[in-house]
Structure formats: C-alpha cells, structure tokens
Image 1 (tube, rainbow, N blue to C red):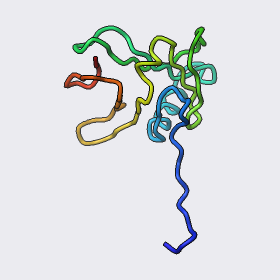
Image 2 (cartoon, one colour):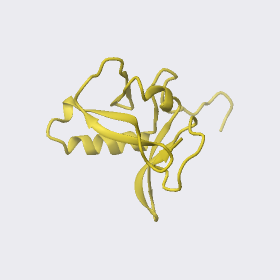
Image 3 (cartoon, rainbow, N blue to C red):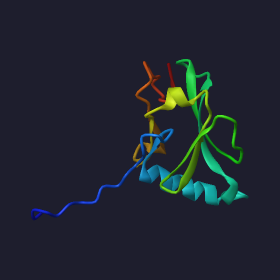
Image 4 (cartoon, helix red, strand yellow):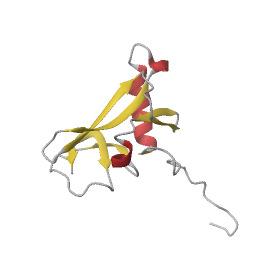
Length: 124
C-alpha cells in the first residue's frame, strides 16, 4: 500500500447506539425481517429478561412497538430498540451472526456480564 492511501473502515456502531450490531448480523436480521408479514413496521428488539442458568437471559425478537424510554437506533439499515430497563445491561454488547461447522446463530458478547453460562444464552 502506498503512502497517503487509506482503507475505508466500516463503522459498526456509534457510541450512542444501544448495542453493536455487526454487518453480518445486520444482513441476517434484514433477511429474517423480510420473511415477516409487515417487515416495514418491524425493528429488532434486544432485551434482558430474568431467567436462564446465570440469572438473566438475552431476548432478540421483532417488535412493531415503540415503548416509553426505548433507546432506538438504525444500525447498518436495521432499526434496533432496547427498553430502558435492559439498556444499562446491554451497553457495549456486540451482536454478530456466526455460521460455522458447529452451527449458525447469533453470538452475543456482553462486556457487562460478570459471568456467563456454557450455552452463552444467559449471564449475571
């Protein structure tokens, strides 16, 4: 690479975004939303709910509601909403789509989790 040339970086999120959604995760979410009945009205809702073997579990689902206090953003063209109770637990959380020999699915890396279970679906 010659001096003065730069490689454009893909911005995954802005500091004010409720979560970090990778491009591969956004592509998968867009694909899944298009299979729904009213795709234009839907957003990806990311939440923390009581349960799981470590105390809390993650919930990712499509939602057409805008709740009071929601932290909302559009990340890589995907509308994302996080409720006000979940937002502190999810700040800085990275959501990726992984497709490997072991299987395919969303991978969640949460810097706020003190511990996680072996399945990766719950944390404390």
